[in-house]
Length: 251
Image (cartoon, rainbow, N blue to C red; front, side, top):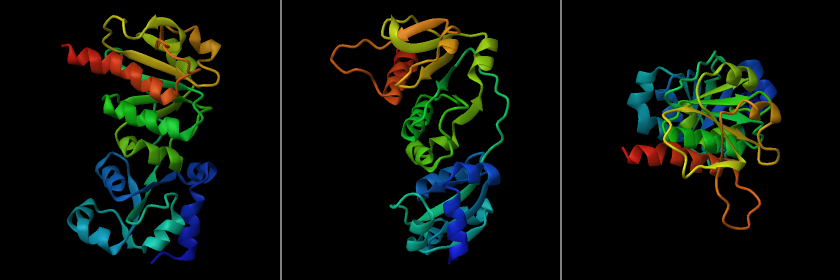
């Protein structure tokens, strides 16, 4: 069973400074934890109930990840999710590798995204549309924040998230760079493009002026009603569906 010291340590990983220091983050819930074990991420330790072990024993033994029994109450004390009553994993944060974004498939770049729910949802949207890379500005929320991990619903196990200075990356990029805003070409009438980067800014400030100058195309989602703005994750989904979902369905 989990000692008070272990519970305290796991809880310490709720804070970014401790995650950065130990290069570990928390994943909770049976389905999501199993997805991370199957992924390229390295899992350091599992803490789970006897029932979780019994239901997944063959897979867990084969995965060779250290497993320690814990009660539902202990998991609730240690973790972020009050609803987690099965398993919790400590997973290594991958190295922030150099990324060369392809020009013949879509990637997402995010400028100053501070809401963890939005980042987690955008990672999930990227996974839905088969987008492999999400590049995030260094001043955005941490992708390994428990709220982001939870909102991504396991998609973080499949989508690579990179933290970089976006101006350097986009300056060197040789493909199409689309930027969303109130002005630009209607996303519904945009001609077919095979790939590029979709740059999304924060809801409050939009895309920063320095990055806006690097856009090859400005696009917009037409406003038909009275809403002042769209949630950035919702806007990302609409754009991805028009760039990828609709185009692919017409092939």
